[in-house]
Length: 86
Image 1 (cartoon, rainbow, N blue to C red):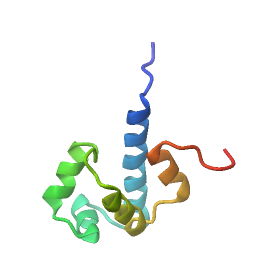
Image 2 (tube, rainbow, N blue to C red; image 1 turned 135 degrees about the vertical axis):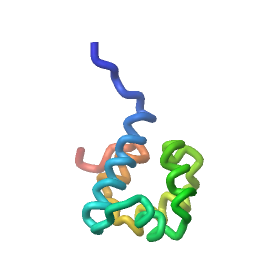
Image 3 (cartoon, rainbow, N blue to C red; image 1 turned 180 degrees about the vertical axis):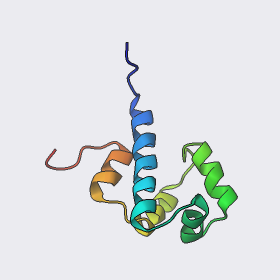
């Protein structure tokens, strides 16, 4: 029997996918490049990744979405709301 994802797991997966997509689109190979772009040290970014960005503040998420050019669909999936028209 296949395991179903909880809504929290689905949001975490959406965030990981959005970051991976942004790395490809912006030509970044490593997490240190993403951390540099966001203005945090690599250790902080990697620690946040390990914790699935749980303690992330809204301001930090907004900055990440702007800097990494998340689409509206990505943002809606990450925060767990349906996008208009879906």
